[in-house]
Length: 451
Image 1 (tube, rainbow, N blue to C red):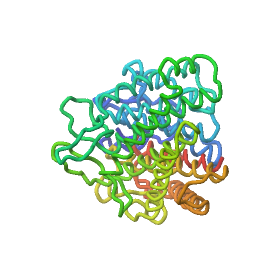
Image 2 (cartoon, rainbow, N blue to C red):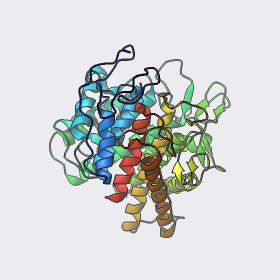
Image 3 (cartoon, rainbow, N blue to C red):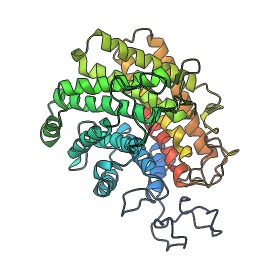
Image 4 (spheres, rainbow, N blue to C red):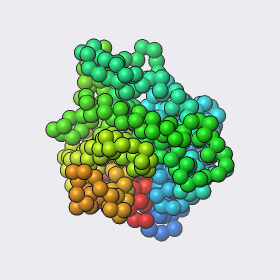
């Protein structure tokens, strides 16, 4: 679905770009009545620009489903996660009530946000955990503590599709702790995005348990954690699950020469599908950061071996990020593009394609790494094999890439009223729900860096 209030390639009518229209279903091609006023931008400051971009996308929310019209199920979770991170990282609560409202509508239609694609389910697991009371430093909407209960149900569900110890593919390789892409009985593929999403989810769920335990949070949220078994040894097991899953990714889907993560391993043929999208590497970076953060948070619960393992993961995350910010296939003149996945030479701007948002996951993951490395340097944290100067230099590289990308969005990729196109180096061309969603992670990371 082309983002409303912009010229639709299938409808020659050029709508007034200052006015938004109600959501359309896929089958509704008639122009609906114009109603909702366009989000106002009071000034040209970063907070005003980022909030307008968010508000423009939220105009496309379907109140009946809670999802964003024109986005798929998993990309709606991605959009809401970017918006939630924007509020959390900027110490603002502007959009959290809308996030809670829409998420509760989704939960009412999709119990625990579970569907047959395990990666879809895990994108929602990340969102639920992000908005849960123990995870967020901001006041959450009433009742958000039960999000941890949904996280527990998702963990139980996905655990059924995590390959157990001793599992081998047709070539005899140990594929234990990898995660099947789908919950269908005939699924025989594991992939890096699902497995690394699982790794980050397990590690951050362990952090949430640790946070409840150490901060002595009272009430419903802590009780839910106890009932779900998320305290004490359970948190340690969650981190160990995360480590095992990352181990699989680095055994078979990681290219040590290029420092990228490939897409899929087919269990019945042993074939590695060497698709190299930025979000598979990005999400693996995020999983590594989450594991290291969890091990630090749990302190003495881990011995030297596990701490060394966590350090190895963080070093790998830094290696991948260091190569990423210089990878010509993903970065053009200092701007994140990944035109190989979705670019002007292989796509049309009006195509509402998931690939538009792949690079946004990379930007989000780089933001998480930047945030954690900054914290490590401020606390004089030590990582074996990495000096403080290396952490600072990588943070500077990430900072520079994100700022240049944001600057290019404002100069080359917008019509000036809060809409953004898919080509981040320009021209703006046309705005779709996918292209609008994709820029929100850049906005969120900019708020993180400026605050």
